Length: 78
Image (cartoon, rainbow, N blue to C red; front, side, top):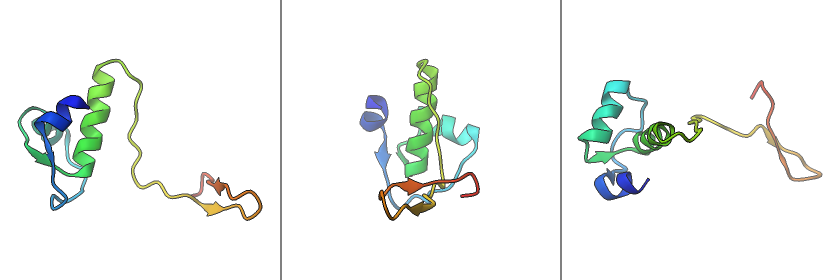
């Protein structure tokens, strides 16, 4: 993460949309600004390249809050 925080700049005006593998390679090697998804994707790829097990989950939403325990209940259908 140090590399990304030193060499790249987060820009909230960049559209947060999924980009292809060529674009993320370009962001890691040449890019200067990126969206939250660019940074998240690059972090996962760099972690995997370093041998760390990592995944990126997008679009996660909790199902509902269990009224008695206050826990979030997530089902496969969510």
